[in-house]
Image 1 (tube, rainbow over the protein chains, first blue to last red):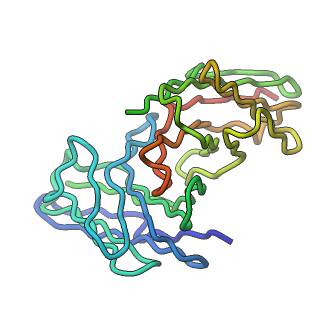
Image 2: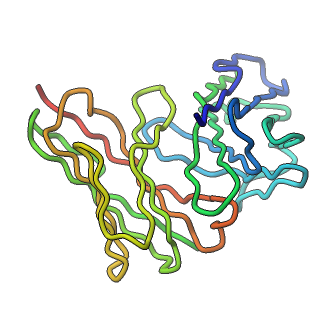
Length: 116
Length: 115
């Protein structure tokens, strides 16, 4: 169990386009999902914590109007990169955890975003 | 807030040798420490985790040790194989993130197992 699906896996689009990435927990309910950004050969940088039915909690330095997060159900969270520019090109990866403290996070396959 | 440091950044070992990766954390209230393995272009996968009420946990060739007093924990891989080659990340759950399962990740260790 604990399968997380992320879609799409690749996105190439023009500058100014908004891009939506979906993260789904397939076989468990995830009250909390997390969105990370990962640069080549670097660690996972937490962008925001997505809580079902409430507003996301953004990490310092992450623009909430740039990276819109919606967690409308216990199995789906979406990240929308609004008006994307080349500097937004990166590997975005989500994770989800079951309810309760100290539960492991289970990761999706990630989305490689390239803005031309 | 929590800060996690990880060493070494790269590690090269011969097949069959052991590999040790070490992490330190700053928040003494942290109580959950998972380790993830990430192969190139793929998702991080949980390989082992430890909670603060135990000092050591083992799963076949993989073991993790935790020293709460010193605030460090280590990953030990014995009898390494080429398929162990990957980037390994340690993580710690800060005290303020316990309910949400928030994790702070280390900077990663690129492990290369030479056949």
